[in-house]
Length: 125
Image (cartoon, rainbow, N blue to C red; front, side):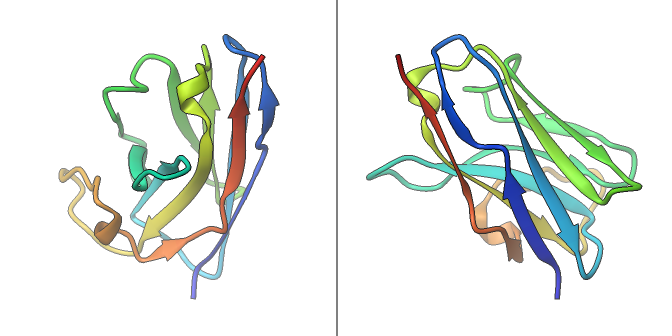
């Protein structure tokens, strides 16, 4: 059973930056992703990374502002959030799927099997 733990959330001013971490244990994932859920809204895809090769892809709303990376040795995925806006306020979740197609983009909640508990990001002045 893969266990995912997010960290790094907090309160930040508009235009500021944060880096979230997702530490994985108990197994490997072929794809790991980030989702977020704002109050009263559905959980939405933010971006994902292929563990083999490191290919990343993002939702249009965050492309160019957010960057996903990984550290294989630490089995940890990161989400660098730059140029933050109030509408980025949400609980951010990391997710993983154990198997999949290297060339397919997985963007649905149903595509992922493992989930972390979430970390709150609040962008406010």
